[in-house]
Length: 133
Image 1 (tube, rainbow, N blue to C red):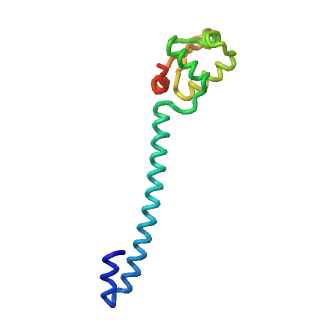
Image 2: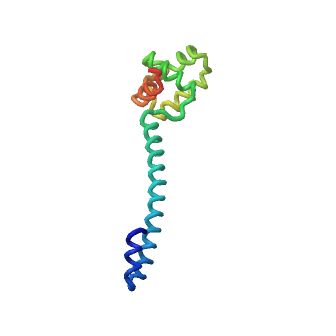
């Protein structure tokens, strides 16, 4: 408490204020601890948000390969991807759907033809952030 406590000792009727001051100091210390914890949580959430902005979270190696292929071959089809990357068609379809859902790629559909996939901005950001583009 320091000099305020010393001053309050000299004033006889200040005992009541001393107790209030001690309680406020405890509350202040508690708030400082809580503030520090909240700052740490905020920083962690900012990092997570940045990851999502750049599309940097949770893609597999196969999905990375597919994104690189689609970036290099605009309007790529699933059979082209499957053959070039030596993956089964089912596996490619699964990854394409996940990448489409996560907005890394988009599909263009025409009647009687295979969908053609192209890179979205999220996919470009992701590849750029990983040094793949």
